[in-house]
Length: 560
Image (cartoon, rainbow, N blue to C red; front, side, top):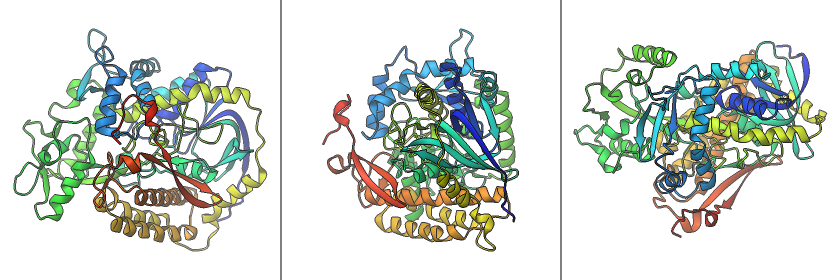
């Protein structure tokens, strides 16, 4: 293919990569804070339709702040979920902003169900928490609001590389999926709202490709908590439909209720202990595992359509269940890896270690350290996925806007631009080679098995890493046949990077903590591993260091 493509040069105050709920929230919040700041969203698919917020359960975490204080939830979360690895101050801020975020979403046009008295209609999910529904047209509503505020949008352009100047952000490059046009975009602030790494195993989470994480890594920003990217969910074996809260009703082939082996009380979302229990059953000869429910309505009990009026969501779920009803002849379940690696390290204003570069939502949830020792949302907090993206989008707005107002318009480094252009189009120049699917399937064979990704051991980490390194050797040989295939090649390369980061950091953390389970190190080790693992690209070399968790300054203290 002739890769002589058009070169378009643009400039803006704030560039937002990604047009899902996080990117749209950031764009709206920046314009509300600073109407004169120019904001541009660049989305590789279609803004308002991309991302994960409109493809899942459509629920938001809810805290009744008339009955609990943020510090109450923080204490519960640190002890039961985050395992002392989280930023308690940031988690408290998230809880305190709950009502404000729900009110802003309503103001921006999202449909949230309310009771006749005007209060939000919620369903309890666990100690101190509940969830509220939001219809799946949320991102479309937010796009309309952003456009009214003057946010500019470019769709079908994939952001590929970040540009820096004197150690600060200077913009980004990308290419059009329609005609291959190369984009060079100068920007004073850049917000990465590109999602997590989900390894493309589960269709609901398939849009999390990790390419934004890879761009940030190549630019030299630090990543944190890369080992917490192994979230798995119970699904029906035949249809692969997710079974929410199915871990409460697990039975082995002998009819024994095995949930009681690991779960003492109902929790707000699935624990990795449920995955381990399934693994035990399948390896000790008492599998397969089925679910049994007392309620005649199956795992849904009272269907959410009877609780909340959400027309878009109801049609989505109707079609989903219609597809599966003739496939699922029983309730046999197995875990499916979802991934949710979200490691871009950020501070409380969501700014990365490169000045002017921000990362929000599923790109930086674990990197923010807010959740502690769990993968990104649901992160054992059902409904925290969408709401965390909203929280991060609002949290970055003032800093990103102020940085854009105070910084001079940067000049892009032409050598960086040329290097990026060469890297982007390289797969189109090759006369032969493997496909992106070849690389993707090999990585999936390394991360998919639960004994490689969730319930791990040094020997199995080595085996999985060796498979990933085989995939890494294929990356320079990938050949693309068109611009959509070109994007697939870059997403496959990002998948390899994420998996390598995950396994190398997993080998370092010699303990079990929160979601992270090692068979060979089954105990939590506060003496040696109350640390964050930091990954960074240093002159092309993948490096790892540790950073002590500053628990001394927070209210809930671990036992050392």
